[in-house]
Image 1 (cartoon, one colour):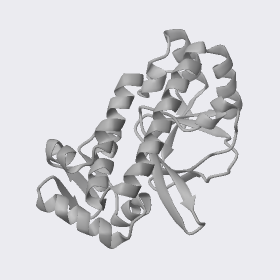
Image 2 (image 1 turned 135 degrees about the vertical axis):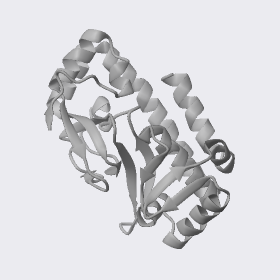
Image 3 (image 1 turned 180 degrees about the vertical axis):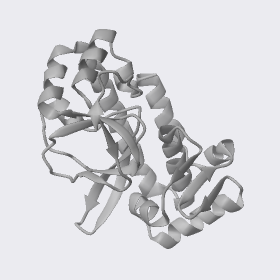
Length: 235
């Protein structure tokens, strides 16, 4: 980990801030490396630090009946983890699991709250982002209930590609089953179908997007709906 006082932020929320606010907040951040499948928080934990991913991806996961888990949101370079703090709540609503290894900017809760008081622009930007996340969670709930696994997997791959900023990323069938709340055999069947259609290639945990347009067609409408909301609110 290192100070980021001389590092240019590639997080979109931070980049949207006025220059002085951006510079002051970055000076308080620490650049940290997040490892694949690392659990940053469990639902109900006190939030001691917030994260602004720059080259990493964080999954928001909700526990179901104490035995199962389901992904309800994704956070990449477009967002942050720690939104309950802007509502004066310091408890994690969801578990936070690293889906994509890479860098993030970390800030302690006291420092973040101090910056929130100083920067009206930061407060406004995070309120808009909160709206986007709430919409994403609601859309995901409907998607998980009504859409088939293959369409959900295509949507998930598109969302991950957007945040990974790459056509290729690492993920296992076991992790995908965990994220989508289905059995591993269901993920295998859906992934094989997408591969047979030459939309993706999958080997030893490495997924490569071969045909994004085709993958968008295979996805449910939820992906386009979520992207439209993000573009409209955060642009």
